[in-house]
Amino acid sequence: MKKAFCLFFVSIILVVIGYFISIYAFCNAIQCEKLYCDEILKFSEYYAINIRGHLFAGYLALGGFLLSLKAFIVVTMKDNVYDNQKYKDNWLKQKKFRPELKLYTPLKELSDFLYFAIFASILSAVFQMSIGLIDHWVASVFSIWSAIYAALLLINCLMLIKKNLDSWFSYLED
Image 1 (cartoon, rainbow, N blue to C red):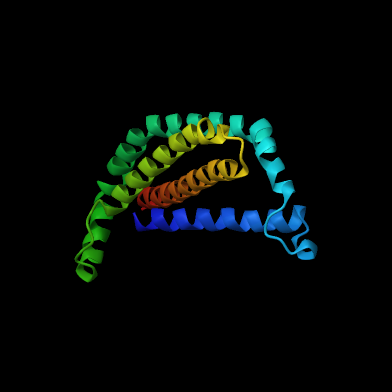
Image 2 (spheres, rainbow, N blue to C red):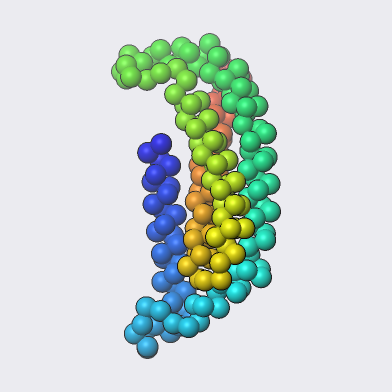
């Protein structure tokens, strides 16, 4: 949960950095010494024509795909990694040094992040076709921010799945 909030703030920071880069790149903010210019208004038009539909379709498909795979991924990981006797032996060794460690904590983390990624993906798709329809650059930036946050959650899910698969393959090799 804490990591999801960290990714939330990272996504906000990325959007703010993107805003300032666009101000300096398109508005020549160094010479005019402003933090806003009329060129930014063109972004909402570009977003509406070129980006919004693709983000809607992509994140709706991603959310549905992850939703259908979530149970399969979690059950497969449980059966092949966390119910493996070698994993349990390793867990018992680590529990001596960290008594708060629970057997299925990494699996619960993976399950939670898959849930967050699914929720954020579907919510991002909804934002593209609700808030994204507002013809204002702030609404466009908000909609893109939601897609960035969903992408960061998805990347974290992929890293957790990779870590679990590496554990599984190491138990298979032994």
